[in-house]
Length: 228
Image (cartoon, rainbow, N blue to C red; front, side, top):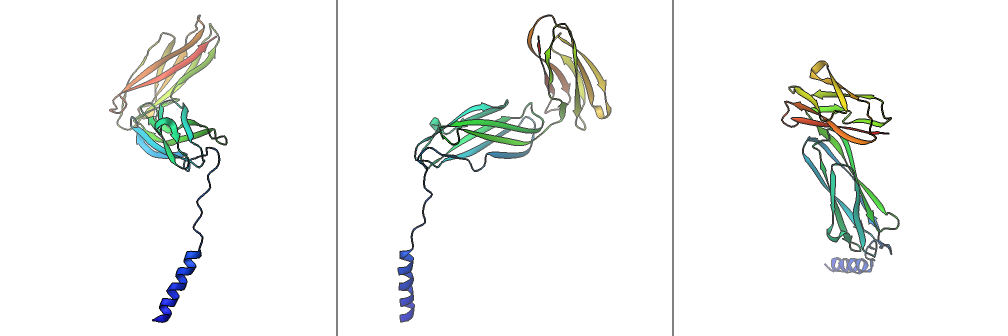
């Protein structure tokens, strides 16, 4: 009918006059944008590898450079080829977390440096729970600064899951002595006594716990300090 054709023509004219949606304007300098800088990996078994790729957009008119600088222990990272993101484009940073010696609730971060004058650093975070058959609290023995000729003592508790048994506890250094106390539910308390030392300097030893766990047949607990 004639009025249908007339209405269609009018709509075509009106729609043709509407302005096209504007694209977001780009900043004159490189501009880094990360919509999600934290990844929650949930709960994973100990020994598994956590991987996540973070998207990094460049909202500037000049190329954006991205380069990992600092990562917490047990983390590695990689970036887009060449470490450069073109103007208006997106790149990526992949973070890998090795959970082999990190039971319990964990937060790991990687710091990425950029040439964005307003955001020279980006902190990317992995968080979650690493489920273990055996847990040590604390997970390392730190004596701090110890005057020469004096002794110090620290305590570590080892708690196994149901069905897991702790077999042995041994030391790898003559610097300290161990005393093992058996607790309920097959847990143990280890008293680590640092012997008086004559020589100054830092030390990095460990004590080793063996268990019946297939996932954690052996746990190495660092023993650290500095004799002054």
